[in-house]
Length: 110
Length: 112
Image (cartoon, rainbow over all chains, first blue to last red; front, side):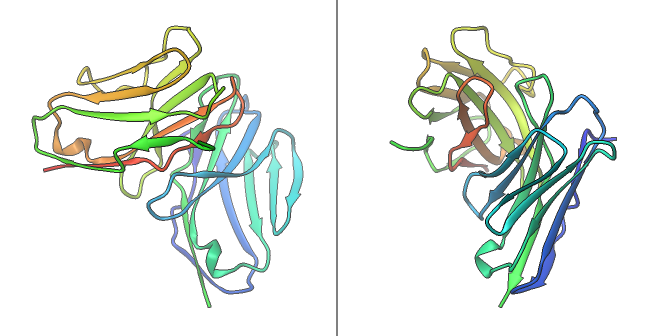
């Protein structure tokens, strides 16, 4: 079992939909949880960073962490075509090197 | 500059040649990481530099891969005797100590 599992998609939704992106992880020592967005032919950019269970909101984005289930989610409200990208989760424990999921490709069509 | 920069942005080389990829981290960032991203795959950790400490080379896939960093500035990733399976995007990231990472745009390497 990989340390971080993420469905590669693609996930295709209509504009305005609520998007749910998810990752599961196996190591309970993981404490820091990040979501990156990667546009085609660009490097990943940090969207959300959290280190506790519960929800963290930033504009249309909400990151949710459930440590008991080892499950993290990123919700995007009122999705826009400009949200079309690959979304990578990254999880870190005591090590300085995060473990990345393989990314979920999201397509928001007008 | 404001962000991490990498050069070249694209590199096409012939199998067996050596290539050098460069990363300029954000000024003041003590940590620097190299990753490899194959098409449709996640990020594969290669090497990590933190200040003047010995680098963590545990992710380098073979002895054809090496990297150097001058102090807390520029880093160079070298791939010797390139193979077709080395074709990928090579991403560099920097951070303040163990804080979150900021990525460069990557170098797209194609080995023919």
